[in-house]
Image (tube, rainbow, N blue to C red; front, side, top):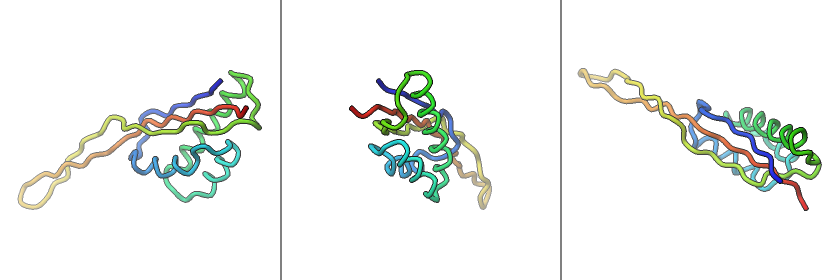
Length: 111
């Protein structure tokens, strides 16, 4: 049995999120939450909230024990990119890419 939680269109680059997700992969859920609380990265609060949501899904929807949960999978995929224009010298225009992310967290029970 597994419990999932998704965060779609988060306004943060996937590259920044993947650094945080690498810290919690294959760890027990309560330890992963502790790690996220102490990690000074921009993605940490988002991933922490998502992990809490996955834990609640596991407990309430799938009747899983929250003491036996661990982060089985966590990954990020790029979302839609917002394209903006920044004026530059001599009438040129540079493109600014504002990237978004789709974050997924999957929890499973230890056997």
